[in-house]
Image 1 (cartoon, rainbow, N blue to C red):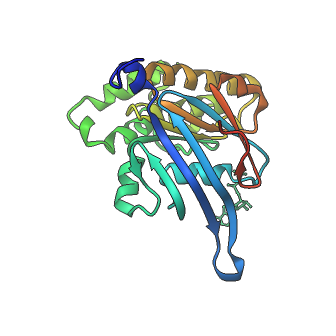
Image 2: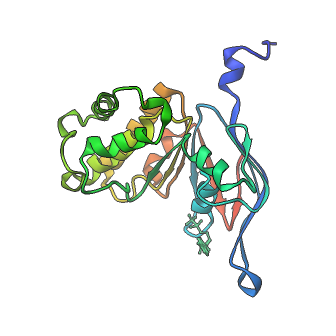
Length: 237
Ligand code: ADP
């Protein structure tokens, strides 16, 4: 048996731990339960894909894990911190440690690729004394956009925008990346390239990815696939 402190043990530490989580929208007679008794553990370095029908609660669960909305009942531990019922300050602190990639990439179209990536670094005090321009450019080079650093986001193709979004999410070396339908707006080839890039960078940086998708063509990049239906996780072992 290996001792508790070996790197093997540390590498398998859970970064997301969810127990008996329930979530509701609305109030009074309009109150509707959308997540039912969710239990899930995701270990450091895992790439987990969550799939399932539209309206089943995938995005809601993702936003709770990312501290983008507050969980209501149960336990939700992210990077060792309980965030169910957490204060706004705690959630803000958590959000700095997470990278987000969305379907619509959410870039600032009037800023260049480099400026979009820089913005992510500017949110982190630990990078204030570094050359953040250089860091942003290096990250853009690693997503194959070294030749587009000074192009405005609005002038880039869909696949290139999503690469900038990946660079922005990963440049601060987050421990967790949450991605919501990152290939939905892309053609088959660009979608595949984008997720393979995410997979490669995540493995290099040792970060954990939870990716929500309807796209059956990318399921094979996952270490584990979980399935959500009617607000319940069906196979989360
Ligand atoms: P999925 O990501 O699987 O498509 P969602 O998490 O977006 O599912 O939605 C789950 C359920 O929660 C749906 O019935 C949806 O209509 C409802 N829902 C999502 N967001 C809100 C909201 N802000 N207010 C009220 N209901 C919501």
